[in-house]
Image (cartoon, rainbow, N blue to C red; front, top):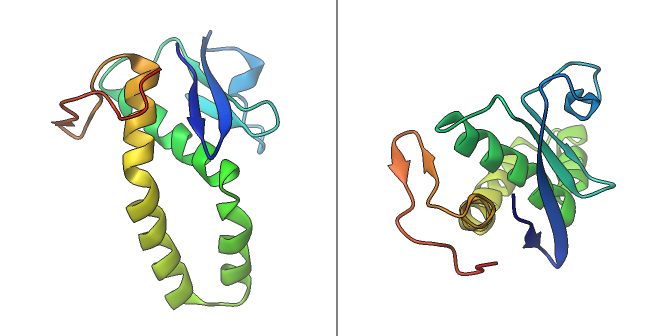
Length: 129
């Protein structure tokens, strides 16, 4: 699989066997995919195939975007302060600003248009690898 860049950081995406330790999340549970913020690696089980692969990859890329852009600390602060309006606006900005970035990254990684919930991107992203 290919790499992608978000906020100037290069991320790798690797396919691993279903029992690979990299698929154990921070709570100790096995997952279909995980994102390692320190190593900037997304690991996806080899058993995940399209169309689920597309959806899982975009989800993990969203985690990478959150890490690379430092979005998580802001969300944690708003939750701690009970700022529900702030969380709502933050979520809308996140989707508005980074949804296309996630679709473009997934398209680059897979080398083909991605499909989620029956909707497929019809062209490669602006940041071709």
